[in-house]
Amino acid sequence: MPQVFRIALIVLLLLNISCLDDGTDCGSSGSQYIDVQGVSGTNVAIGNSFSDFDTLSVGASVGFANFGIRVTPEVVFSNEATASKGGFQAFACSPVPPQPTEEIAEIAVFSSADYSQSSSDKVFLARDTLNSIVKIYDPYSGRIVGLPDFFVEDDIVASDQPITLQLISAPLAVTEQQFTVHYRLENGEFYQFTTELIKITP
Image (cartoon, rainbow, N blue to C red; front, side, top):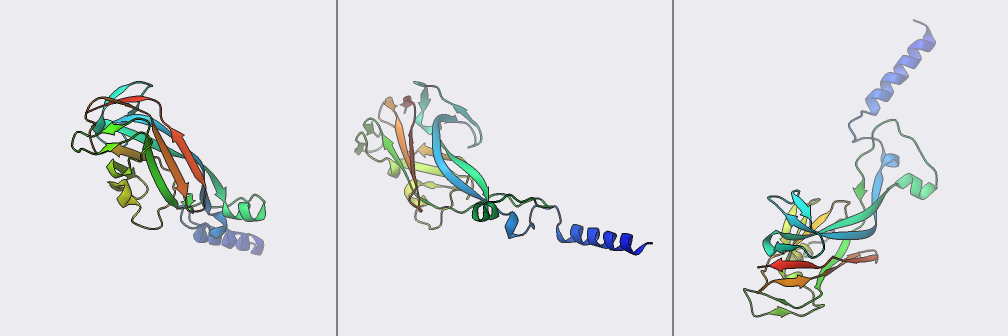
């Protein structure tokens, strides 16, 4: 076997061993990060799971137990090396999945009209925050908790996965609502959206 061919074969073997295509070892230069640049949201009717939902049209009627607000981060995926050096690079092996680098500081839900509860005398006035009667499903962490409890922990990452918000208190009567959701990151970025008008039934 010629010496040159033997050297080339060894080099190829070393490359294959050092860079297995399992998506876990491409070196730090191949890492990507998630950059949140906005959020959008829509009213949904949730079925048996948080992945089973139907988008609701304007003015649709839905029972409070099935109602949800689907919060979708609008993100770009950036290569850390590209962002810091201004150039593009190619890598021989598959990169790891894009990783969150930003943290969520606050999510707040506000009502457009008074929200009277069937189980309490407390009435949330228009433009009040409803956080105390909202639960959140965050698929990145797998947590389903009350919105205030969600922020008890530190280092809540801002992933590219949609988040689902749900009311946990039935209205006293049918109520027409538009919800405004605030989404603020630890780095000071702030985004918001307002849902379409919806009818929520007890």
